[in-house]
Image 1: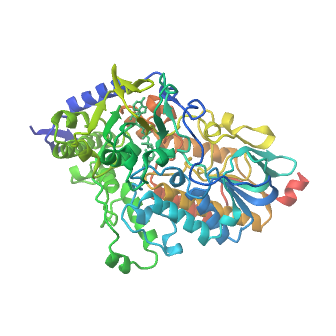
Image 2 (image 1 turned 30 degrees about the vertical axis):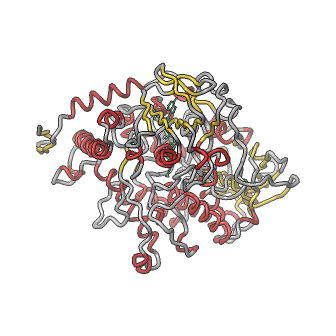
Image 3 (image 1 turned 60 degrees about the horizontal axis):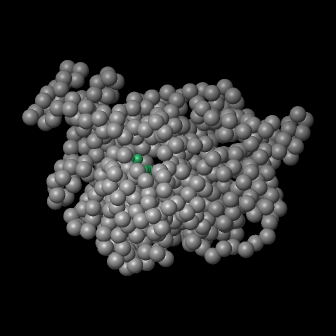
Amino acid sequence: MTITLPICGTEIDVDFDPAPIRQRYAEERARRLREDNFGQFQGFADVRAIDDTDQFSAPIERGAIAAEHDVVILGGGFGGLLAGAYLTQQGVTDFRIVEQAGDFGGTWYWNRYPGVQCDVESYIYLPLLEETGYLPTQRYADGDEILGHAQRIGRHFDLYRAALFQTSATSVRWSDTLQRWEIRTDRDDVLTARFVVRANGPLNKPQFPRVPGIADFKGAMFHTSRWDYGYTGGDQHGGMTNLRDKRVAIIGTGATGIQAVPFLAEDAAELFVIQRTPSLVGPRDNRPTDPAWAASLTPGWQQRRHHNFNSLVNGHPQDENLVGDIWTTILTAVTGRHLVEAPLESFALDDQVVLAEVADMQLMRTVHDRIEGIVANPATAEKLKPWFGAICKRPTFNDEYLQSFNRPSVHLIASANGVEKFTETGLVVDGEHYEVDCIVFATGFETGSSTADRYGYDIVGRNGLSMREEFAAGAKTLHGFFSAGFPNFVELGLSQNAYVVNFTYMLDRKARHAARVIGHALSRDIARIEPEDGAQAEWVQRTRESGLARLFYLATCTPGYYSGQGDLQHGFFGDVYQRSEIEYWEMIEKWWEAGAFEGLQLSSAELELQG
Ligand code: NDP
């Protein structure tokens, strides 16, 4: 069937009727919406039956430290590493990096589950490639290669000397008397610093379903970010020979579950994949780095690649697509630009929305077709089809996941309600008990709570101002970096800055900008940097308005962390400035080049003393 849709006088042909698809999306969403939203999850602290210790490094013994620094960086993932690298380039070397793990790497330190890889092309995901003289071995690098690159950055910029590993901040307070931050840690360190740069990451705290009986299960169980290779055998490349006689259940089919399932399917005697909502699984097409291409690269290649990729995923058409991946495919396809001859911008906003909806459905039909083409059992294929818009949830890309369901030993247990309860010997889904030896939780990370809850400390600014309370109804920043009431505090993580796909690119740009502002302040003896209230309020307003289109889209989505599990105000992008990253960074560059620091108050030490 072909139907013709009139959009602003332009006819477009599509071979499906959007109405029943829209209806199906609404039904699937309704089946999964829950009143408890984020309350459906619990953390390690509640699930004491599951081990949370750092099994990847030997315990570090050291005494408490008391020291004064120019800068304390909270977090030693790519954000903290990039902050350290760019501060060093600015000539600022008096800093400490406080990191919970036993080494650098952040999410890549903890996430060592089988099959772990980046989903963004490694030539743009791994930062500072030209600076460190490294080129990844594959288009999508494995987790250990990414962790190795984090460590390479640490060595290259001499950051290990600054690291306090296996150390967590417990209190971060501005001292009005000292005009310094005071950072206390779980090792009784007391650090004072003129600046604090926070890079703690958005997905740092593993979560588990809050369903009865989790502590009753007598078999092995662990979260994907604390994989127990002692139990399974093998490593992130597979070879989990201890599972050859084991019945294993994996709960969750998000980006993590999709990567781990093919490896479990290979090694486990039987695998039960517990699916509440199927993911969009696109093609991956991983391949080794082509030596001829590597030899052809000329200086500045990584920045040019970034610009090309970011232009495409931010809706700026380009003559060529250098990365040519699924992100650029999806994010250009869902605009509907290809369905009309006239430029998209010439259509009224309402028409653009209709066009985008149709284009999105068209894309999802190719996702369904791919499933039918790969999965042999039609009933299983049907259950694996996602019924929601392409960017309702994080898209995933894998060339072995769907194929796993063609193995007789792999069972898809699909239920919109998910796991009902755990027992001593297994778990229950839709009233049916599945007896297993091992349960793997690929159930994601806490997102809806305040950063104070997720990071284990509040930021307390001038006059005892609590960031937890100040940000209770959403972040308040200038450009996603600085916040009134919290002098010399710089947020490097996801905030009211622009961000679309490549998280490390965002961290790189934020770190570069933060380092030059801090370098400027330190070299001119500026004691305090803080936004003006009016400028901050205006940025907060612009950020809120920028998110309205996405809120409208997410309102039709099956719940997930992008949509705040149905509580849209607490969605993952709620505090993000949702306009083009290209335009945002052009704005920041102009702001910097103007040299007026518009919207920021820079107070000199002299003024402070007089005040
Ligand atoms: P997600 O939050 O994306 O997925 C959690 C999964 O657990 C979902 O499938 C969810 O189902 C399911 N689930 C939760 N509760 C239950 C329950 N009671 N019963 C059954 N199933 C349940 O977590 P991930 O760890 O997969 O991914 C988190 C993010 O980490 C990604 O979105 C991505 O940003 C990042 N990541 C990046 C990777 C990369 O780039 N290589 C790889 C892996 C992760 P439902 O959908 O119904 O809620």
